[in-house]
Image 1 (cartoon, rainbow, N blue to C red):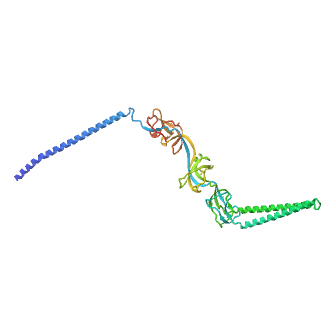
Image 2: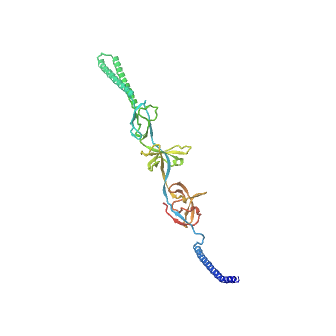
Image 3: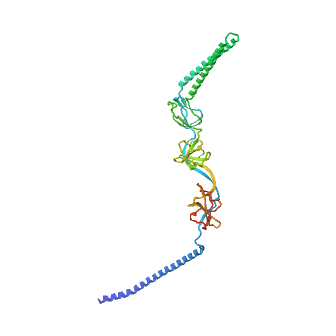
Length: 394
């Protein structure tokens, strides 16, 4: 037992110096780390102080730095007043064609939709067998009346030669003259009746009232037609088309007959030139809209009943044009900022016009030679100095 205690004392004596050396190393490393951190902090603090000092030296004495704004000298531009609308295509002058005469059984139909026809051209024929017989009978009556007239005239001529010799009385001459006149009258009646029958027979043919394009056909051979059958054909006079576009009352005020237009049918990118030929004199009290009619030349792509859009060039105006970002508004009205000779902001009241793809038209307040602030106007105050960045408007 005494031996064990001695061994334990020897062991404890050797371990104590080792632990002391270990703590010395840990303490030394900790001191080195703390010193390194302190040195790094001192270096960073010095750099920040130098930076703050340089910024303070660069800052103007009056306070914060002046803002930079984009400015431009707009000049004046010619703007086109464009009115857009949509509507339906139709024949400019549509001609409904029906039966003008007595009617009957249709024997032939000579045209199809899309056919071009001339004035008076036959579109369909109606059976005229009975009417032909009547016309032949009247023609024979004319020949009989002509023969009676020749006989009456010959008898009158002979009587006039004999009256001088006293072989015939003056009363006989009067009777023969009256007989000749009656024969002439009967001939005229027969001729008038024959002409009337011929006219009626011609009306049996369904004819085009004017040259144009056949749009629809609603009759077939064998069909019985009469004056009550309604419309058998529809035609576009001269093939002329139009777009009937609904426009607001304010837009109609800008239009007049003769202004140019561009029409684009739905389903195609092709544009057709035209011109407004009529502006509606009446406004719908419910919708506050009216109709502008745009005349178009014939093209197969322009189909009546189709839908199309229109771009109407209603006129032009020369004015200062600014982007919308340059125009500000408040309780006092619309205004812009311009820069004076000292690059200080000046508030200028303006009168605005139409808003187009190019910008806002300024109709009053600017001459076009000012330096106008295009952006950041909402953050400026009158008299505030700025740094201008001059740009050129397109």
